[in-house]
Amino acid sequence: MVVCKLSVLLLAVMLGAHPGISQELPEWKMDSIRLGVKNLLNHYQLIHNQINATADPAIEREFINLFSNPKVLIVNEIDQDSPNQEISAQNYVSLLPTLFPEGLTLDFNMNRILVSRPKYDFNNRYLVNVWLEQSLMGISKGKALANQHRIVVTIGFNFLDGKMSGWEIWGIALPPKSQTYLTVKLSPSLGSLVNQSVDQDERFNLEPGLGYAGGVGLMYLINSHLGGQLGIRYAHYQSSLTLDHLDPHGGFDPHLEQVNYHTRFWFVEMPIGAAYKITLARRLNALLGAGISPGVRLFESFTSSAVNSNSRSRQTGVISDSQWIDGLTRFNLGFYSELSIMWQLRQNTAFMIGVDFHHGLTSLGEVEQPDYVNSRYQGLYNPIWRSPDSNNLLRSLGITIGVAIQIESKKE
Image (tube, rainbow, N blue to C red; front, top):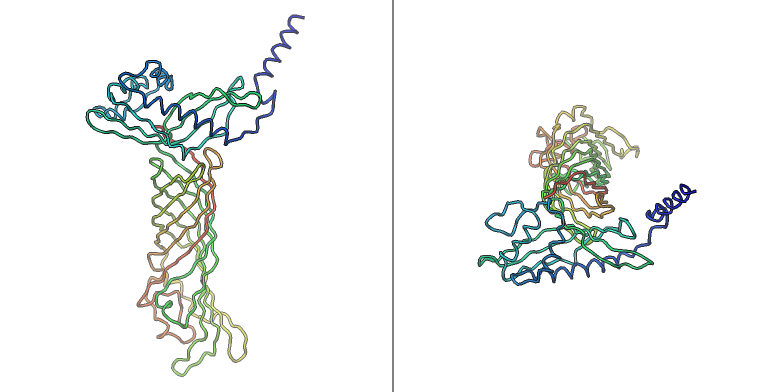
């Protein structure tokens, strides 16, 4: 009987201690949680302002309690004599009255904070992580010192009968100094060939074609903003060039109208460049990127057609040069720029949407070929050849959709 009663009591305690069994998770009002977080942080801003030679020891003890683990080492960034020294948090705090007899100001930027959803701890206790910018300002040895960085504050509160109370700071840590992201992107695009001699010739009409690109990459941020990125992507470009008719030349008239030249290229490219991340709002960042994009042409396709002015039928293969591919280069170098918006879905996963622009730096043509004026009779002129006075370049503008997954971080 005693064993049975103990078993029932133990089961009751277990059920009461685990919210996932005893009750449903609360429907959190994040605005109310953010208000509680701001009220608590505002309180500690005032406490930190009072740290000086005559400060109340109770206030200093409360400040020290924010760093309760004596084994945690932090970088002493406020003592000019030892800027790279790692000391315990307690020793760090004990230096403040000596280094800053006129006081030290610690300010939190309340306009740019990110608050996670609460996670259950124990006994109706919940924890949230808060990402925000912290500014330290003070005067030491006649010099004004300032330091600004992002921190992660862990805050706990009680939730009982639909009410939140007992807000406390449970810890403060610096966010990752370096961050590594795996990015996966897909980009539908409009692409075209760029040829100055064609652009300046009113007889031609250059039409962009639908293309696409997809790939994976790594983005490494050395701090909260600046970093680099590299990746590999598979890209498809296509473009069309139309001509009202092929002009007669040397007494020969091919009788061809509505001439269409259609080109398609498939490349493997490796974009390498710089990245810069800007925090716009809670869970919202902007990402700027730019760099070079070397590529290797894998496949190509060229078709031509025209309407016979006599029979009114469309003929294909009006360009009869079977060796046209020999005049193209295998390698291509271009530059790219991109602008993306990153929406934080989870702590380590973000959705990305933006635009990217690619433009060739080297010509698709390797050998100069005659321009249209000198080779306008049927079977010789090819618009993707390199002209004597201009190069043939690829260009595309696309919409980028993808995800960024944080896979590694290094703490300061």
